[in-house]
Image 1 (tube, rainbow over the protein chains, first blue to last red):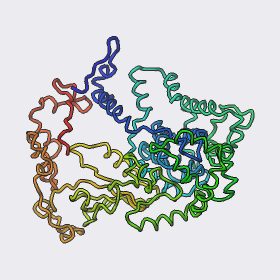
Image 2 (image 1 turned 180 degrees about the vertical axis):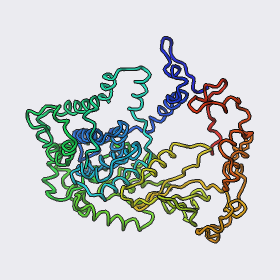
Image 3 (image 1 turned 180 degrees about the horizontal axis):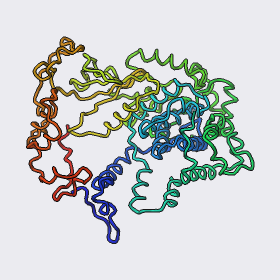
Image 4 (image 1 turned 90 degrees about the vertical axis):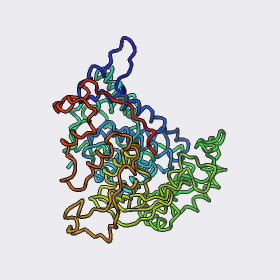
Length: 185
Length: 376
């Protein structure tokens, strides 16, 4: 019986508590968790910064800051942001780019992540606007295809955020603690 | 125009957290330098103002900021190439990469300290690649140029303003990990598949029958048009990324994905129910699009021949065949399916459950692990 799993003594089994709640999908959680865990090694991104002759860690952090703002402003899911950042890292670990198009990579990654995860993804024009017209419609679409190509449309990254959600649920941690954890991630 | 976007100033916690994240990493002084910072005296709370001003703050070119940030790393190059559209990489530099992508020990320092040695090579590289530019204004030309490249087969298009770590010329550097893109893998190339007749057309894709030279078998080619206003359709992105993870005997297998500039082609296994005719689809021959000479005459075959695993399940083939009838009048409906002998082994109580009660509340219902060995 896959749904069942052992928990250490003195720990309440969160899934058992919600065993009959259809919406918690308790029978499947452990499978999902183990599946994501097993896929994690397949998606590791190496430390690529030294091979990026034109980029610095500074630029990446600036880009990620910007992507966080994009996520907030468009009210995107947290998963979208994490997937977007992951895509940027994956792309940069495979392709060497110049600093001028770093933001294009970021925008295209967010676009792909939104399409993957969002119910109503933002439009391409929205992304062009927040890049302050630095890139054209054509360039963004082209970069989108490039990223899809390089990642070979493997977008099922096991995101750190998903694990956090699960941990937070099982431990029933409070909102401030969860927020702190998000910040650390 | 953007007023639908902003409700996040009420959402509190995540927004604050993100602000904090930024303020921790960057102090105010630096943000002023970037031209995106706060005017002095503005508190963080006031920053969360209306939708429009938020979008205006968000709207910026990061490359403007990068210019100031990267003086130490890029200055030497500017002296060399001036306004040349230097592309951000050099073969010289790539040569120093080890197969694993790391810079060999000792050579990393060279990059920063000994520019005189490198400069000569850089000059050469810059000249050779003058036509290559990352300047956004010139990128359109690159696009045109790349379109020409695509016309030549055997050479997968490579982005002009970028270079891949697995440069095709350098065998020793290539690892298995990179082979999916521009490497020596036969997959992912349009030459590997022969497009035969069209099988059907949907709102965003056309399905062709095809032949795979790699596997010497008939495949279904689903060709998705990429020239849409919103880029790659999100349905396609989701379909591909999800199917990539799903390898299961009961799910149509996605063999391969072929990218070209205009299209994205998914290569699926080919499933035959036979060409529809009057006996299994009354009225089909009178449909406006029915062209027998184009469709070809395929005889339906027993599903068990395609999925031998159906024989392993009691009533499996009968159930699948009943569900896959073309004529709705002959097709098994959901209610009737529940009464099919296929389900005879299940407790009768399952059929009487209210909609909002988990099937696992019935005694004796458990999940069992799937045996994946049956998948070819």
